[in-house]
Amino acid sequence: MTSDLSNKFLAAVELEKTRLSSRRSLLGKSAFIGGGAALALAAVPAFRVSAQDEELEADPYFEDDGVNILNYALTLEHLEATFYREGLATFAPTDFDETGSVYALLEQIGEHENAHVEALTATIEELGGTAVEEGTYDFGYTDVDTFLVTAAALENTGVAAYAGAAPSVAVLAPSLVEFALGVHSVEARHASFIGALINDENVQPFPNAVDSPLTPEEVLEIAGPFIVSDDAVATPEA
Image (spheres, rainbow, N blue to C red):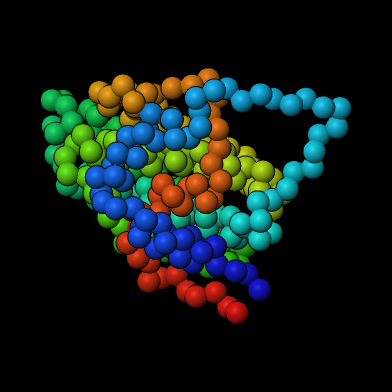
């Protein structure tokens, strides 16, 4: 039996949404995340070197299932792809700068997220799994500034989520390690570009020398409140 990680994701989202008191607190956290502080990047972690490396283990959150970890990534990519599609349809190119060049680059980022969605969906289907579908989201931005702060939060969360899932990918889907690392580096480029656009001392394009990963539970806390519902997700079998 293959359990549905995305259903667990959404269940945790509902619990997290009740904890957050307002959209203002969410956007405040988003700015904080964009600056890197909530990603525990304040200090460079120490690296342990030993004669024998410890064996990699998959995060139990993924329950030893390669399809689950791919659906975890797909859930985040749907979130990002929809964010750019809806946001860029809301604003005009000159809302970002006089020439519209920033808008064009944001469009390219959106195209990248769409490509990630398509690649992950195809891979899940090739493995005989069911790909989670796009849900309904509430991103809460009201203008260009809050759009960019939210974009920084999503991109930085994506970077840390891929880093956190890397050991599980190595164990559960080793043939996809190269793909996952490639997506991770692109998400980092997105985060850096958007961080450079924001005129806020808490949001930096590259705030620290070494990034720290996020666990699935930590990703839920940040990304969860953006998700309103996803009727396409089936209830897991008992």
